[in-house]
Length: 490
Image (cartoon, rainbow, N blue to C red):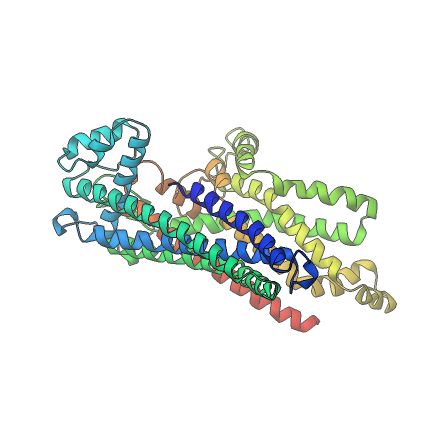
């Protein structure tokens, strides 16, 4: 049974339990709600919560544990001879999962029958061709052990899903039955429901933490697999980025330094554009603009933040690039050879970042107490002196935070770089040359002909892990600066 249908059935049981619980509570009180410890709705909510919480909790736990169990079982079926040189068991398991997914999709589309998909004597060459004809993604010819493991993977998953459906429905029915049995006029339903809601709120607050942990663990494990196949010293200190998708990475050079240089260079150009304009705009809006002008200008400025980045990328490719090429190209100063360059992406990215700097800086400047301004005016300072010597120092922690937020946004940008800066990984100080960034290469390495059993695909996770550590360090530094100046002006 699909998970969506299971979800809806559990909700239907819980909804029915709500009305039954409410009715049973009133019945136990002889129809007089004043004899109840809690309002009738709390008795219904008690049944509702005790139906969905165990059922959905078991569902989530099952979905987390089943893949681990299935992978463990399938891993034992794969002989060492099926693991090619330069690969690993976890990468072979990834191939098994892709083959199993391809079989599932082909069966759902009616391109092959279930009997063919489960046939233990099926020819693996024929099955590979069938999956390719069905449009399913297979990175290479499926070997006999991979096909057998994929078929077993499908059986285990199907059995697990059936058992999960039965277990979840039994948990829902049992929870509803127990809570209905507890329902009577002296039962403290309100206390139980409020405690249950508090637990649910705590669980909701924990989702962000657990999600972060999951992302980090995913990056760590896949990065570890990459470093098993490619030397870490060559990755971190190599100055050449030249992936080769032939020979499973034997001739690839995957040095990250050119990508880091392109990332920092383009981000620096973007910040040189965004920070002065955004900060000056924030000072004008908060200190000089009339309420009427501010009410019009600030929302108009923040419209920039709502424009999709692909639109900025097209703007860089079709408008800014040709414009700069006309000025700095062969017809102008002769510095620029093509429209895709660092300066193109940096300029457009800087325009995109203006709202991040201006809006946050404006809010921080407005938060500076008016008493500090009045004290400065009382000492004879002019408005400009007050802004320079009182307002801006007091607002500096927030301004630094806004700038570093913009920097993190610039480092993580992809589409503007792809369309505006080109795809060349090089070390150069010339802003009129094409370069690329870490994020752009993450996208390119995970698309196309990449095989997840090769370093060329797994390097994307190493790039992501490196970028994560850099941005984390940037945020820690920002926190240090903010705390330092906050103590000075509080």
